[in-house]
Length: 365
Figure (cartoon, rainbow, N blue to C red):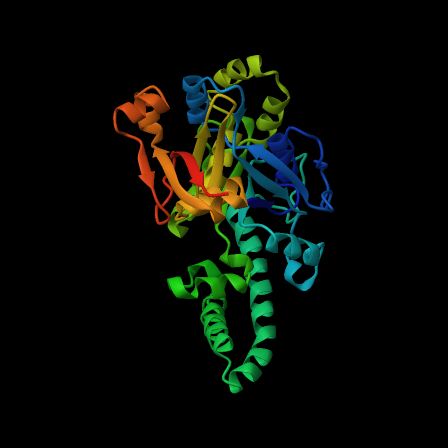
């Protein structure tokens, strides 16, 4: 099961530098000119979760396998992308393929790094990106209406639902609001998701600051954080330049380097966790002598779906899930202690997976 978070932004805001640090590779060219990233670069990163190491230590697991998140570095957008300017068509196509979007905005001044619009204004950068995505969504929806109207005259029920959702979405978009602000009922969710609108995807603002502002941010990033709060979105302050340096350091030197900067952990850890939260994911664990492993499902998933992430046969033949909360597993010294204390539960097909559940699935072959 893959979960993709796209890294988007105007040229020269630090996207590729950030991506390189995320994947600890130089796969993406971080050069000082627009469109240096022609094809999207894809990298998988481990999601930092100290609970996994603790579970492994208690169970004496031979291997630790974290859950992973995919980041996609997408070619820089410019004004007019929705009309094909720059690498517009490629850009929009790649954005459609991700599950969530991280808007990287420039929150630093540097005369040696050219801004494509000749000024440093992170809110304007974010507005440019959002506007191009909204224009593309409007064009996409308007093109679908004639065919749906024909189907509607033939009393097509699916067409009726689709055109209602399109009209509500267009009303928001024409009012300058993204599609994620459209109110959707539970029974409409599947049809709405099928529209695959760019602005229906959840958004995270990534404030790329100078090295001196990595710990506390600056005036630019404060403005972005205020906007994010007003929009009900999240924001992360990070210095891509520092993160690129940290990524190249040996593990035993990182803590000292972070301490000199007043940082408790790499900013990338916060970014990865924020991306994970943005996708509304939860983690469950399987723990044993061979391995301790973290797995990912969407919030609201039921026990059989979680079993299916491990193997499709587990979901098909699901009988029950032997379940221990992370807190009980740690507090009671592992599986045996939890069983003896009566803290292991037998959960059925309707059980909603909780973040931190430790599962052992029973299934019929």
